[in-house]
Amino acid sequence: MSILIINARVVNASGESAAACDIRIDNGRIERMAPQISRNGEQIIDAVGKLVLPGFIDLHVHLREPGREDKETIATGSQAAVKGGFTSIFCMPNTTPAIDTAQVVQYILDQARKVGLVNVYPVGAITKGRAGVEITEMMDLRRAGCLGLSDDGRGLMNAGLMRRALEYARMSGLLIMQHCEDETLSNKGAMNESAVSTLLGLKGDPLVSETVIIARDIELARYLSARVHFMHISSARSVELIRRAKAEGVPVTCEATPHHFALTEDLVKTFNTAAKVNPPLRGWDDVAAIRAGLKDGTIDCIATDHAPHTQEDKEVEFDAAPPGLIGLETAFGLVVKELVNPGILTMAQVVERMSGAPARIMGLESKGVIAAGKDADIVIVDMNREWTVSREDTVSKSKNSPFLGQRLQGRVVATICGGRVVYEE
Ligand code: DOR
Image 1: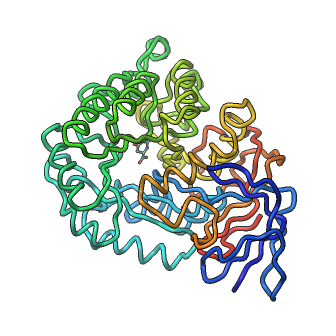
Image 2: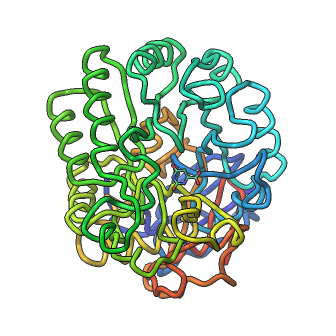
């Protein structure tokens, strides 16, 4: 089936096209882009009044399968992804069993192929069972299809093991994606350690639990000339450390989540467990620094850390609730509301942070850009549409969002993945 998108105002990371064009898609690829392409029986999609962007790529998603299919499945997570405009998602290994063997990788790839909505890239564990003790068979994981490794949900705290992981990962062609947390400092804190945590009587996780790992891993990356990707960074100090490391030529990259650029710890005052997340929501200075880092490129990309949890799991006292919130369906609306409308990011920069940079970081050469010859992974958005986040509108199996009831602007109206329409409003 061929598709012809007509009246396409294309935005790539390099900028917005001066005039609308037609895009012909055939065999999963963008075959041709021209001012006007004559029709030849293709499925026509009229993008007049909309923007046409490269499909978003999310480096940080929890699909919960295998093991916690009551929270999310590869099918429901894929549906949430395409509704949010994502065409490629990297799923984290904190499943049961963990993604620490080729068999689990293969299982996820098989399921994802059966669902057939979105490109799913399993992220393997750095250590067996994510226990932080013994390194996984990295070459096996790479051969099975992994591009990156992480113990996400837990930081890799042992410096010697991290050194070896970086060396083996480089040999295996894998990217180490670090969950930046020293658990001896975070100490099972339920929220950011601050005046607010004292006031609420909740145990705090100080931002230094994040920065000590980032500072250490910057030194390891420098020493070994090895790449490290820092996941979901949350503090102003983290942004500063990474900015300086990049200026010094250390090969580090990082991501930030919509909740860390949109929300502060003040939300925890409601004791709404949807606001419990790891790393925790921090202060306004941290939010401002995350925004500045996204603007100047210190923060390479936006990743959701989509972390579904059931109502039963979340409807407990704040201390006992698991951390995490869902993010795939609200990411773009939050980016428009919090970053584009206030003039922090241009749409070209949004494309860079949500498509271009994540594609480059993971080595997906045929993705992240709309151009002839590239994969036909495309999202069409209506920038003017306002909408309200609601449970009913949410297709993720879990509804743990602190954004329920919020008005957002910017809505995905269609998603094309591999040359097929996988979502249409
Ligand atoms: O909030 C979080 N939830 N942070 C993590 O690192 C893990 C995730 C989860 O798996 O629920």
